[in-house]
Length: 208
Image (cartoon, rainbow, N blue to C red; front, side):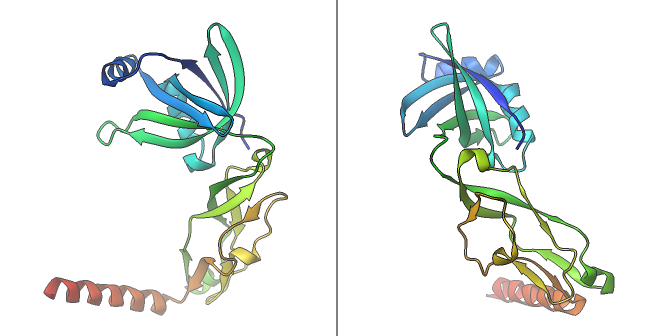
């Protein structure tokens, strides 16, 4: 997992006016909470938030270090994003919820899935379908990875790879149904039939 660090400053001002002033200064109001900490109002640099968001495929799986400035002191904490509010027009973060992680307790996150390899079935005209793009896993924080790569190169037409078929890294446990299919290679005619069924259902719905 990549090393990521963010700086944050404890703030006392609250309210919409204070938040607007921070955003004009390219800063983001935030809050930090967790099982062993009272909620703290924070200020972070918008550029730092955006940099971390771009460094991973899914924010909920990002674990990073926070250097917390308070009354002239610095405290290091291990945190993750809990929620990020995004401006729908400007596409910039408006507010961030951070969650402090206890390194000796397991966390549950949505881990992104990346398919790697070219299925042998696609060389015969088959079509690879990526059915689910993240999987729920539990692990200790220091075992967390950025994403899970799943090799699909051995899939032939009609073959699928399921959660139970994956060898997970040590310390990471899947929480979803082991029979859940992650990817499948379908025959071209099956793909066309599926599209035709969807079109017919849409036409029926419009007529109704």
